[in-house]
Length: 374
Image (cartoon, rainbow, N blue to C red; front, side, top):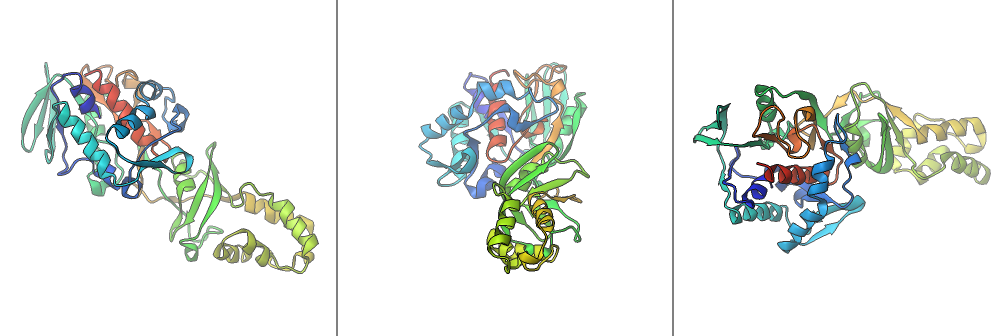
């Protein structure tokens, strides 16, 4: 996007990628259909030590601008839940669109060009395994540490440190969480069970699907909250969102006093989860339970608290939170304040979006504004 943006201004642009094929992360996104943006992009849906930093870029190149580009290429798309936009066909269409845009604007693309060193005198000097290049401006768009099997590295952070920029400690974001084996109600036997839930922690809350895994929890609600949690933070799960569990249990006690708690939970929750919960709760006929006991049970169902022991790490993380400190960058252009001509964009920067196309939109927006400045 940055190369296309700069090329459209008549700039001479060289785009270097250390991979043999460009756009690898685009190709695997959204189950191969690329969740390329979101209808509901807003600055408060991005994490950063400076929550205002992303506003300028997002306002200058919006989700509507990218959708218009997609429509120009007659790429069919559809909207899923919560404003998420996906290709009807393949993520390859988005990569091909961007490559066509680059060719149209005269961008010189060199894949399989691993960079060995970068220096600066009156110009930037980039050494690669296939030759040396110089330029007045240098844009680093190499992402974070997530999904190393696709070639992700800390290259952007190394270059930032080389030129004196600060780094906000990176960590995996949008990542499954690990629970200790004795964490209630977790059990490896629940792997594959999914339900609608609200995940709360660190001042944030997300309602979407939650999935039990062999090692802990995943699903959209968990991935979302994971970006907010620090080590040791507690996670609270509402297993019955939009339902008054207390009223339901007390009403069932009056209407069906001989029904066992197991039966009632099986009507409210997935069967395997219900069977697990009755191992942890008083499983007997509702009529034999006091109202207080039922109220305590309801409270647990609405706010089951767990403390994750860790995450599945960068291998399973969709993004990297943290990154190059925005204090050293211009929010208008993404240029390093102390190093004229040096730019950092996309996931490499300490700006991380929600699940659902937000991080792609940050890539498009930050890339576009940098391309308008170089």
